[in-house]
Length: 105
Image 1 (cartoon, rainbow, N blue to C red):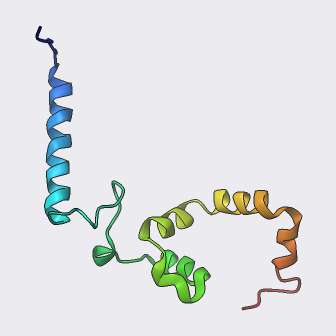
Image 2 (cartoon, one colour):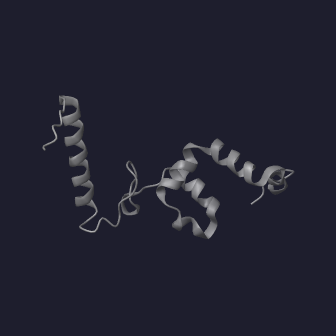
Image 3 (cartoon, rainbow, N blue to C red):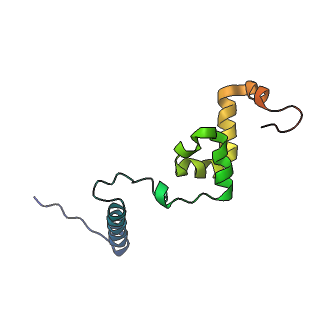
């Protein structure tokens, strides 16, 4: 018994766009797709950090090169969420790590 599937124009259009997008990703990433990242992400070789992302990456010290571009983007765009989550983990102990009389390196 064959199953009948009805597609309207919008559904067909979205399906074609999705297939084309997947083909472009696989072409860009080579046959194994090893460099694939989340949608909207730039792989490392095409990534140029914004000035704020460069500043944020310095938080990680000597490990700054190991931080994926998507993480830097997230930290840049959502500092409030990151700080709230750190506070949830460390609680008031977090204030012990902040400088008392100004910013120190």
